[in-house]
Image 1 (cartoon, rainbow, N blue to C red):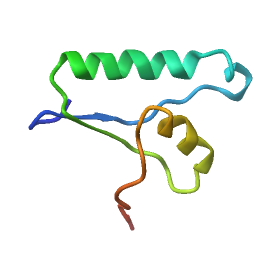
Image 2 (cartoon, rainbow, N blue to C red):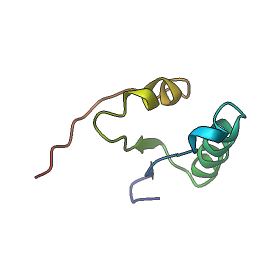
Image 3 (cartoon, one colour):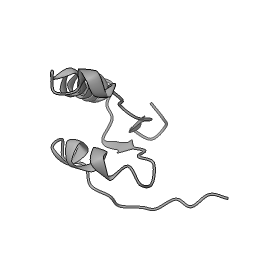
Length: 72
């Protein structure tokens, strides 16, 4: 967790062969519960550009794209 009551998840990844078993959902639920228990008010998740497949998963948990960070 970062300062100022801001939490951040780097990413959640489940191998293709294991998707559809609720593993990602369980990882997200446990992670969000931990952040909430530790007073996170704002939570951010980093998703690599082009990984559009992941966006609907995160949207189920109330996340949406807000900022683009460009790197060189």
